[in-house]
Image (cartoon, rainbow over all chains, first blue to last red; front, side, top):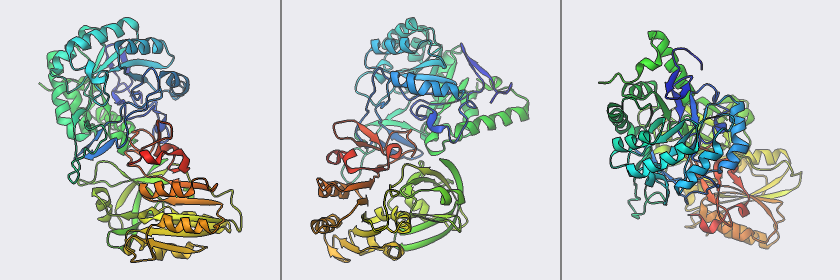
Length: 304
Length: 265
């Protein structure tokens, strides 16, 4: 939806509106075409892509928890070749603003993927996933130390001119330091947060409910934690454009994240239970802003 | 798929904790094919977080309603159990692929194997088979007699023989429904196709029973689903030789050979 009330900028990224959909909760976007217009949302983030197709973890992979869920999918994906050949052209034709979320076991894999994606027609930018808790190697390991974060982001930055988003882990020992490291190494935008490492166990057998043992907690259960983290990073790094993520389901959740410093938001787990939710939030935010004659960009960072 | 707001029109109790929910959804009733499913969500404070997957059991095209068979096993199904006529549910539907029946002709014989609440997708299939003049035998198994309480609804749709088995012998023959089928196949059977829906152990033993018999089979698989339309990638089943298929997207109706049953929990 194009409305002067809704456009926002995150560094080099210009969005028609601040409502995006989070990686891992929106497939490759095309799955949603029956229930929403992909061009109406601000942006979509693909399932985490790797150099080669990846099969993911053994089931069971998810478990419902109070106001949310645990998952350990393990980054199952089609690989960048298939994405570029079969998914991106259709997304571009549908008018979607597409960010490719990417991950690897080693720094070199991230670099190679970033190179392969650079200049791909229809791609708005790249999001580095350094925060997935559900793979044995790579993923969150890069996000757990500011040094590893800086090293990886720096190398990917050199490899691509595409707008670079870095998705941070709430499980990092010091989120502000991770954010500072990513920005210092050339990240244009920070996404926060990914899922929190959690666990659920069958009380009868004592066995973990997810085959991986632990999983990433998402959904409204994590919202106050994510709001606090966005606020904290925004206070420490007021110039860093932030994409807020964590249990967003309603317009008031969007306004809350923007108030604490997010320039845009990503709707995640809510897409599973309500596939039309992101497009509806765009309409609701539009109406809310129009009613008050206020621009969405003026809603950012109002919380002291 | 569409996200349909549907009113509950009525509820039919079959046994304690086993009931049918009828919802008004004329377009779905007109278009859904046997074997497809819906993700059902309930609004309100105490709702479970995710929707739950249910086969469309039957439709009444004249009344514009669809039927779902529900067994209360956890918070999601307990929430559905608390619904009263007039309340609204959200149906993401139709989802998944359908049973194949269009290649069958008058006089063909098929077997349907149902384990407990796995009988759910078969009223609609039986209607289609019946309209084609196909003779369908129903093999219905459960732990105990109450698990077969849906028989009152489904029996009138069965055009062939009905054979029951229960683990405790309280209805039909004592033992497993797959053993019943194995004995029938031993005597010939002459089935063009076997359709099955039930728990994983039933699929595992049925796949063994059918192995090498040269009978086409379609299993309505079930794996815990988060979304129902291929996005969350929770409902995966192991493939022979490695890797996974996504039950909601590539199924739920699958050939037994598509799944490595020995690696299913």
